[in-house]
Length: 194
Image 1 (cartoon, helix red, strand yellow):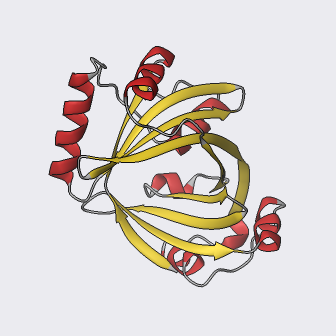
Image 2 (tube, rainbow, N blue to C red):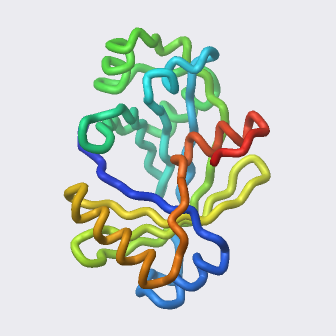
């Protein structure tokens, strides 16, 4: 189990803006593919508490992550899963995990209440830039595609400054950017996510 505080900033991009950043910054040409499998209760108890639960499949490994609000960013709790455990989750038979399930129980959410809602696939490119990590994502889910810039930082101030500078330098409009799970569920419900 690991826990970490995630401080990140996001901005939706047009395809042209995505291509401009890809061309002008030293992102790798080859993207890494990852799949985010999203879980929620029938009455959206996680969302009501500002939380999200996913299994990320990347390079043959599976990590379940609970994201919770924190005074600075998000608190993420991770547990590694075997392929069989991940398959169990995806087929409606969640298994126990050392830490994630305990954190859910603290929120009065039982593992048997969790429902698998679907997958968002990301083709991701990233590199270190001025003391932050820049991430360029092309996402596909439920017949929808979108483009996103993420910036992960050690502090709020460094993240805000780097994002502001990057958007200014490349003349990109700052846009309200719901996180991936919110966009996924908005698409699932036939809503706009902005």
